[in-house]
Length: 190
Image 1 (cartoon, helix red, strand yellow):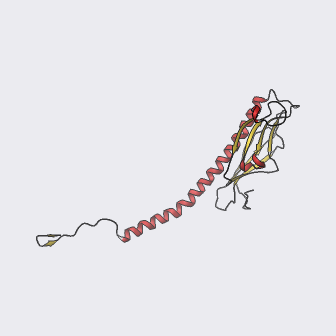
Image 2 (tube, rainbow, N blue to C red):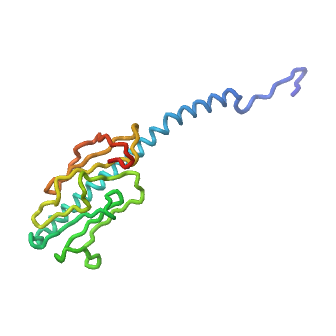
Image 3 (cartoon, one colour):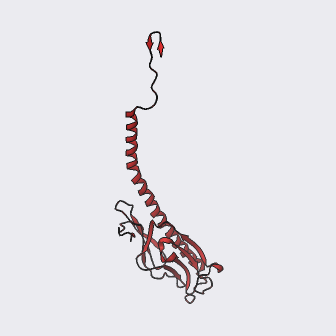
């Protein structure tokens, strides 16, 4: 532009190449730092959530046993059970009550109280011994107790969050005994 013998430069708009390269570099550093921390947080939340759901299920079953305790006797056998879906705690579990003392679950008679299922197998639950069923019997005790349950990330890596370890006692109390469980890296987290 020409004004009375002077050339006036137009004002610059946009970024220079150097400013753009600095911005891309800063963004790259932020991504390198943030992405692993984000994964750690997500996996830690998954472990915590599955642990809490398992604890809530056992507490619910224990409370259901107390509710049905008046009708449960040592001779009637099973009163409240938590059963692993497909014999795998990682896939989920169901709670059922033996309301008519026939020692079988019957969905039509309302025996199945609650079902929790998982399609994502990224967090696994492994009992310390072969146990696909937790039974609150008419005597008020849990079968095969005490038993510990490890809640771990499948294919655990060194920098993944720690797992949790729970202990189920003979009276159906589930206690967190290890919040910093070092999960084994053998592919299944147990």
